[in-house]
Length: 581
Figure 1 (tube, rainbow, N blue to C red):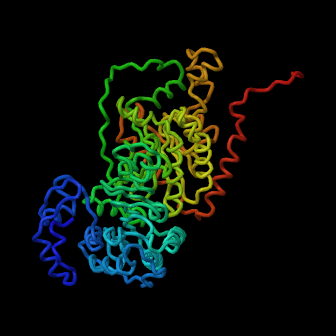
Figure 2: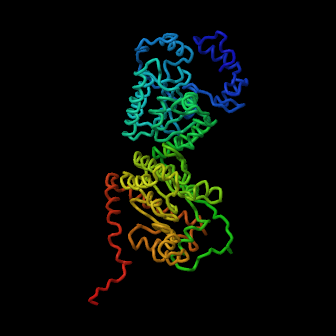
Figure 3: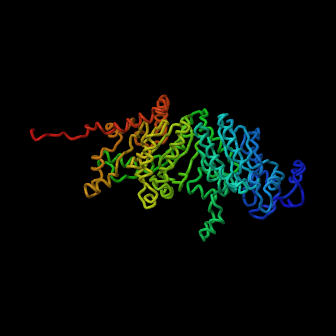
């Protein structure tokens, strides 16, 4: 709060008030220290001592987010002030009058048009200083009108939230704003308008339980507190102490509710990258320039040379082979990692995001295996939980809404087999991912870049075009497990691999894959540069081909392709000799 704010200074003369305030110090409500106002302002209204990010006015938000501080305010509808004639300790009408006098705004919602990264955009701000940013009829009308304006002008819509929830002074009329604003979000989705929600401190109640949690992408401002019920209410209700980071932006990221946590100073640039992809801006191809990590050339790999098929198994598992995030770093430009299933967790085993693949705006998913002991454990060796597959489904919906190609780089030994996965519905998540991939109305290219293991692989492998790296493998079970079950001894793993027909050439002969992508002579692990050039070109060519097909036809063609698959497999059937012979 402003130090000395109770001195009797009123806001009738806004110019005089602002001049006086610039000379004042403020007291940080978080650390209790005094901070010179100019330092506070230059630091984007964040305490330079403790880092607490304070509520910004709508004007301050617009200046922060729009290019060059240039924007035009959008005129919102005006509604009656006090439909219920509500009185608590003071009449609601008096509270409204004081809030207007203190803030200079008519109600909690203010909207403006401007450019973000050169893209015409509408930004709507909930002002946390106006009756705690609570949502009543005026705020609901303002949000609905702002969204309809974005639809009419075909502009991306950014919603900036800071609210305590529904406005109690308007009772049921306030509650109905949850439904009204949600209906407006549905209209945004139907019109294909990008909808990005920026969650700031604090955002609670009926706001989070409606439009604020329905964005295509959720950005949480670093340090924001976000939830449905307040911390104090929950602690009183359950009679126990909550974790210190409970309902923080970082906590919500870990639990799958937001795509990213961004410091206030980085919000503009984060929005630019997102809008560039979702609005399909033109982008030059990124020049691939990667270094192949050094390995010990004399290191022997146990099992090599037993059978050709098992050699492929070992090459697919080579610890120096590039994985999902390596391909992203080498090939994709303007990459934005998108996190969370919006239900329970962020699963690092399943990577996902948006960016430009050889200049083509795309949605990209894939399993990340990790490289060091620590990262492999963090990514669970590329074996996703149900949260990972539900995140993949989220990305499929995103690709469909904006008609962006979906690229899947699958590389996993299988879906994670564990107690938590079973409790959260692993089978259902995998099945739903398969079904959504087959139904999705957007170009879909799936690439087996390493291990194509069981349901964990096919969950994100039902593309219009299925490609496979030359030294990748595809199988229902690992050859070691197959040998243990059928041969009763896993020392027969090489023979099992040969019998299973799991190589890329086998997959092409069985019509399971549409194209084999060549690898450098020694394998992908020996030359990352050549590998990424070959992979990126093959994927881009297939995207261009698929974009010539009407999007409505893709699900039908995709389904017919997979229904026909495996019918003609006589190539590997043993010759049948009847008793007459």
